[in-house]
Length: 450
Ligand SMILES: [Zn+2]
Image: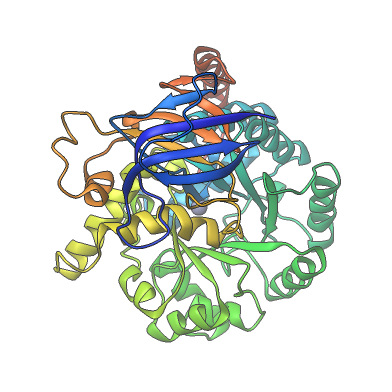
């Protein structure tokens, strides 16, 4: 039995709009046992405690869409639109090896932890060999992060190399193998999905994915309407107005589905998302980097669509920093609508915490500070020159705080970083290993032409 009390914190529980108070949180066996204003009355000097004076205590951030290994590919292919960029990303599968996925994913996890992320959704889509997915999972599990592993499928597409095109039955066997070798739990859950329909998925695969997902009780993760070119493809080849409308034909939208991007969607499609209970992962930095466009986040929120936040992979971000993403999400909507009041900071924080948890089917597990939930918590130092003085804590967490302000990170009450020091791993070792596989990957990439 383990007990820990975090005292003297400014608590942002994310349970109701603008609620914050000075208080303490008691954790027992990984669960939040008590959330109370003021100081503990029964202060036990022998009990383990953290003095969090000068810090905000808030739910750990949820990165609802990423590709962790892509930290190895930061700034490799720049200044490209989605399709020529994707041709290179997909093409790299010809030289990617399991060791790249392990070392890259572990470095990605460490970057996530150091920026206050406690849950990641790894949208997995390049598996030149079955071992690649296993190595990604080994890195994630070793990191201590809560995770959703979305093992998605591609079966077509001119820009997709043969080594990652799969027949549905073979792909489903691979996923069944992954499920057989991992316990499904609140710490690690699974999804499947089409990768980027319709540019790399046939209608028959979409039909099969819905059947398989229902059969195995899996959620669905997909890249949806990321750029205009994807919408033009669905119009040209399938006679549909948009990607969401197209996916509706195969029952892909649903309460256990998360659509990354959803940039080029119509108001009718937003209604479809709301009616089906589909969540969206908004990835503003990636969308800006690739010049995709601006997702209709304000319209989706007004319609009651659940919106989460994601970094996307570092090949299009170029980081795993969700604080950067929060600030970008806020400012992008303000400038797009030419209306400074069009989105408020609390809504952005909501997307990065409980919105993400809900999107990943984890709303009863994490995303808020509430009695009975898992202790997935972070301490953010606000005694910094860029955060002081405090006038509006929600705005200042979104617009002033930086990833480097995260002092302590815990998942299930286990401290993964204490006072900026990792507890499970040697950071120098992880960096060294990542540099080594990076050198190997860069050499291998020179053998490809795009
Ligand atoms: Zn992505």
